[in-house]
Image (tube, rainbow, N blue to C red):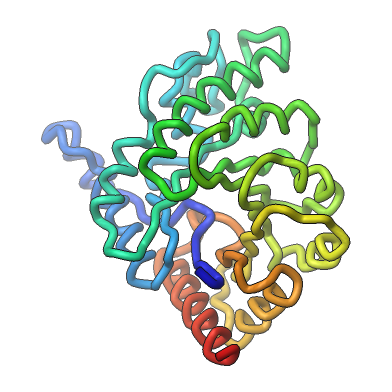
Length: 295
């Protein structure tokens, strides 16, 4: 599909306080409705490759809560060997897939092992290498489950742009050793590590091109085998004009071709819901205008 529209993952749809409170008495899952609202917003906006909205929490707690070896405190802690204890996001993905109309595809999202390791307090491991690959092995099992449900399995590794480590490449590839398409989202300024990232065994590389437009110049000189998912709307509180997004999409085509994907720079979790919805709608409108101009 030319210029497939997608999202990085999170969406600002959260359960109300009343539904969270009543869930203790009713046994109902208060996050089902928030997830459904997030998916419906993406579909109504015209997004072609949607996520579940990651409404159950932030990217660290969702997976730390679902893996053995973590303890949830104000700062998440590792207190024993990390291992897989069962599906984390799989049931939600199944539910979302049943919601989708024909032609809309689903992306399963996992927080990467390098980011997870560096975002928690380690009270157990003496070796970062052992820790990293225990997390990678556990997340690989989740990725295998998701690959049978989702069109794309995406790993989020924002920490790579902060502190690149060669072992992270092996850990990422371990997690994403699955059947089907894979994506790696690294936000931040990745200019210094582009030549490393293009060596990763993934199908799609996803970055913040709106926040860091100089990345276009960096990638121009790179031998690239992956497809690019380029951020064409920001994650700040301003809704861009359609004409501005059109210009950004045309830049994507000039550098990477019409088979690229377009999405927001990063997750939309921290925006008001009406702003997030408008950004997605205008991104889709801009895409249609660009394709119409191209005939």
